[in-house]
Length: 480
Image (tube, rainbow, N blue to C red):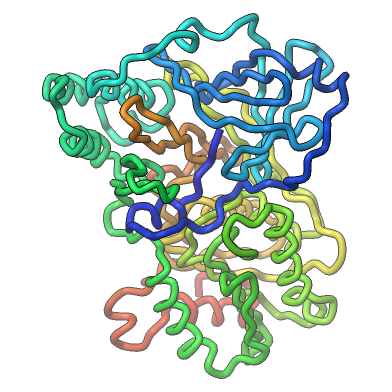
């Protein structure tokens, strides 16, 4: 039931010693016994709608099983830490709630948007009760089947996944080495160019992180990382903010704000999480975010601000919920951010769970409702994109400037393989009011400008920033 952020993907792929804080962290670690009535209502075997997951809840323990037509592999284990709340060893909190009908329930991951529907089962699938083969062929079959049953975008990307199996499965045999199998898996997914797809090797040194990983971004784009973020931040501060006032960092440097000379504000967000240190609980992350927002969008500033630049051009993702939280500071009117659905039929990629509408709710306290210019690019990834999408229907004047975002919106499913490797893949779509998705292509800008190209750096130019300031100054948010 783990969800991995795009930042964690990037850091794993470049061999970082530790990932940034993930989107879903524990709300509490204190032991709070659940009521007997609640325990009796939620204990049992549950299957999620979509997600290929079965949950067994017994005696204060929640055990996840990752299932396909050919496999059942035990996933995360969580212990009860409050009424209906279960916390994994990695800090993910799952909250299980019944829905009146004893055979229906839901599970929500702390810091996630939306929830997953559960249906009661009488017993575990048979495959979950017996030992499974663990050789290279078994790993290949689970790898292929995990994509076959969950990946939504084969048709859009022009990939015949059955042809991929027919090509590569004959190359795998019981003597295939881990290095060879890793190479096969990598070749199979490379043509997807999906930044939410990754192949992860085993944790051989026991540090809690994969020893190596393979992934690809959309062609012509770069995955954000710490080095790129630091380079861009220095460039922006020295070039764009040289005459700004009240330059401040928040959230471990992942949020930057400054007042621009023309009366506009500049807000740079490099990720939606990692504000309170490694493995901080979600509540602590949210508290740090609110500290920043209370300062940035104070009553005095929101009264006089003539426009706001929100810079997401280097943003590695994180918590979608934090994006909705920020959007709530930018509206006086509730509105639909997007709807979320997941693949829900192993054999039919056109069938999905019922779209779950997710809304932006106006925050308590000061809110800024004036013109906003959102800067995006190919290194705007995952939660950076869902936040961008959440601003598309924002009441008021909002314009996007720069380049299309990366094109990955789903939470990431982490699937274990029999040989100890794992694969990360998406299985969801985020829909606009009209039912459109931007997976693969990314969200396009209204106004196209280069974003941190070599030429821009060499000539000390930031065309997207300059365009945003000009547009906001005109207040019409036109393309002139």
